[in-house]
Amino acid sequence: MSYQAEICHRKTAWPKMRHTLSIASHEPANWLGALLLMLFSGIILAPVLSVLLNAARVQSGDKGRTGTAEGAFTAYYLLRTVASRMSDLLLWTPLLNTLAVAVSIVVGALVVGITLAWLIYRTDIAGRKGFATLLIVPFMLPSWTFALAWTTLFKNHAIGGQPGWLEAMGIQTPKWMAYGYFPIVIIMTLHYTPLVILILGNALRRIDNQMEECARVLGASRNVIAFKIIIPLVRPALLSASLLIFADCIGEFALPYILGLPVHFDTLSTSLYRAISTRQFGVAAVIATVIMLMGMITLLLDMKMLREAKRFVTVGGKGVMERRRSLGRGRILAAAVPLTFILLGVAIPLLTLFLSTVMLLPGRFTADNFTLAYWIGHNLDTVALHNGILLMP
Image (tube, rainbow, N blue to C red):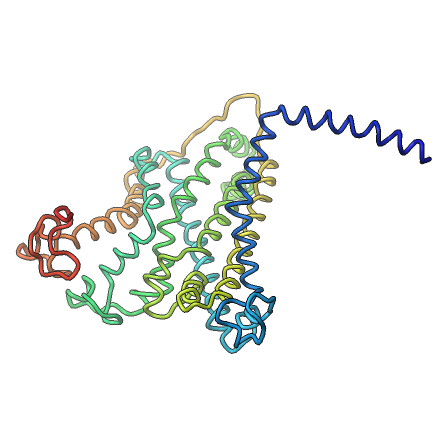
C-alpha cells in the first residue's frame, strides 16, 4: 500500500469507527454489559488478583523467614506449601481428603438422586406431587444444621462437653461414625441429592415418551431403551449436576470444621482456616489459589457441558407426550423410598435439634427431663443464658 493510500485509509477508518461507537453507545445492552464487566472486576477479579499477589509477595512478619524485604516477590510460600516438610499437613493430605469427600458425595448424590427422580417423574408412585416438593427441603436447609443434629445424636467421649444421645443411653458410638469422613459424606449426600433431583427431573420431563414407545414397538429391550435413548438424553444434566456438586464440596467449610477438626480430618477449607488463624497469610493465599483453580476448572467443564447439551435437544412437531410407568400395587411400597429420605434429611435432624432445646439432660426421654426453661425461663444456671432466649434483651 502506498503512502497516499494509507493516509486515505486512515481518514476513512476513523469516521467509520466513530460511527460504530456512536451506534453502540445508544444501545442499552452495551451499557449494561459494561456495567456488569465493572461489577465483575470489582467483586471477583480484584479479590482473585489480591490472593495471587499475597501468594507471591513477602507478608508482614516474614522478612526473617524469607530473607527478603516485606512486599518483595518470593516463591517461599509456594515452596513451603507444595514441596516442604510441612506440605503433607498444609496441602497434600487436605487435598486428598477433599477429593475423596467430593467424589464420594457426587457418587452418593447421583445414586440416590437418580432413583428418587425416576420414581417421582417417571412413575405413578403414591404421593408423587407432595414428594416432589418435600424432597427439595434438605437442599434449602444449611448444612451445619445437619452437622449439629449429627453431633447431638452421635457425639462420643472423643471431645469434651455433654455426651450425645446414644452415648447417654449407653450406646458407645465409634469415632469413625461420630466424626470425620463418614458423617461428612452422609450429610452432604443428603444435602445435595435434591440438586440432582431438580436438574435430572427437568431433563426427564423434556423427554418425549413417544421415542420409548417407538423403540418398544420395534422390539427394543428395556436395557437398550435405557442406554441408547434415556441416558444419552439426560447425560448432560447428570454431568452438570455432578460438576456443580463437586465444585461446591471443594469449598465446603461448616461440616469439615464441625465434624472433621475433632479428629484432625482436614480438608482444603479447614487447612485454609488454620493458616489464617495462625497468621500464615502467604500459605493461606497459596491454598486459596488451589481452591480457586479447582473451582475454575470445574466451572469451565460445566460450561462445556452446557454447550454439549444443545446436541441432545429433541425436536418434534407435537408437544412432548409424558407417560408414567404404572407400579400397580407397588405404588404405596415404592413411596417408602422418598419417605425414608425425607425422614433422614428433614424430620429427624429438625426434630433432634428442637428436642435438644427442651431437654435438661441429653438422651433422657422422661417427663421430668423436658422443660421450656431455655425458651421462657428465668435465672438459669447456664453460662451463656441467664434467661430464656425469648426473654433476653
